[in-house]
Image (cartoon, rainbow, N blue to C red; front, side, top):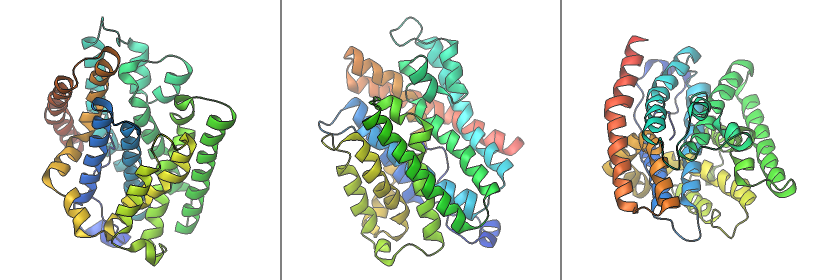
Length: 340
């Protein structure tokens, strides 16, 4: 799901402008782990934990780290930044929405052009909870949060001077967003979707990770957090805090900061972890993750609500996603980046 390429190193600005970015395989592998959690959680649910929800958090904290690097450390030109985001995201999304609207016509998850429009304008995370749901598009809420985060972080990169001021603002906004979610869920009695599909709540996952990324780049991350075991321990603790007995707001107040720390601490992790994440199966899953995330939702609905066999449905997800990646996503991105 996360749409930013894992090709960025934490470099000084001058080096970032002149050096070719090295591809960090373990970040692709983290993305591969994220989509694996989503697919397992949707097609082979594990009792006691919602792995689909957890997988989305893995995506979000990775996006926060990468956006922190791109916008505040590398100082990527915003015009080029948004062009690359568009070329990465929009062609595959447009094809998916049109194909799903036509292909699902007459089924129990059919949707019409108004719902499609909210997906294509990245407003579904609010339209889906305030106006009308379309089950085949429910996963688009997370894309909406990411797109809104791109805009907010880009504005901060332009309007706020001084890295320390940026970090303070990101942390303050993160705390406000987490408090917003806790109040919505606990005090106002809103359900999960009404609380945690909203950008004004869920952006905390991205902003927290971006702030830790900047603290790390400036050498302000305490030494004990740069241990080779921190990434694994923080990730495991974050996963455990997503177990069902833990109340929902605590998932985001306690677990998300740990996951944000984990993805940023991968740079210090031992080879046992980075080697696993950099393995070819994990990296390939990471490369396919956006198309897999787009296409899994309608097939998941057939499994979850109609009892369809999980394995054939998952095979169909991979067939559609690989077609999307190699026929739409990859060539469209290359063409647009080359010619636009």
